[in-house]
Length: 222
Image (cartoon, rainbow, N blue to C red; front, side, top):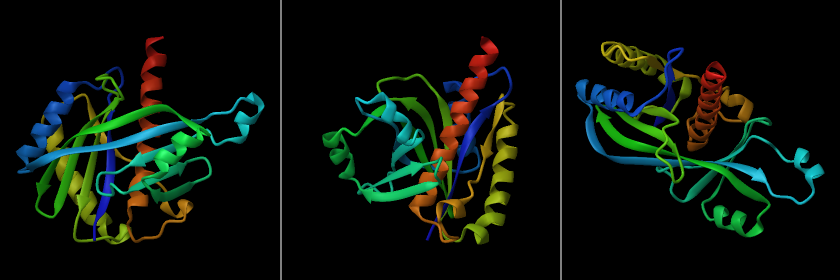
């Protein structure tokens, strides 16, 4: 039994994400008695269709993502946000896709950080960086509550924990805050019983928000 919320750091207008914020957030977890347990890493890949016929490109889904989650190393999750589809496959599907070459990797992003234990909660805080780069694209936090796997039953305790967390972060006067945007899981055919597919859908939602934030900052600069 377990349930997760995936949050992303939303910078204030005119500010950007940097490693100093990540460091402060990590210290914040320890200040509320979070015990560091080790590294945490997940990988999300954006795919693009590989076809010689340019006219065929429009027939393929644009928003096609794959994610490898550390708690399910033998599984791979695909999300097509436009059609609200989430699929669970064997992790060997990645090798198959490379051989078929119907889709190619457009960009791969790594979520890299640390895991903390805090009573019945586990927190994972990490940076979002592209492959072969240290260019920070965002900060993500997983809040996992172990005793409950019902989305609705866990809502109140998750909201209460988030209030405590936001108060702890606010004391550091950082230029931004963590945001939780819960997808409509029912649109993806998911039930109230939490699974890793729920986690995959949340990551797809978070990535859409991070991309929108980066684009907003770039448009302000231009």
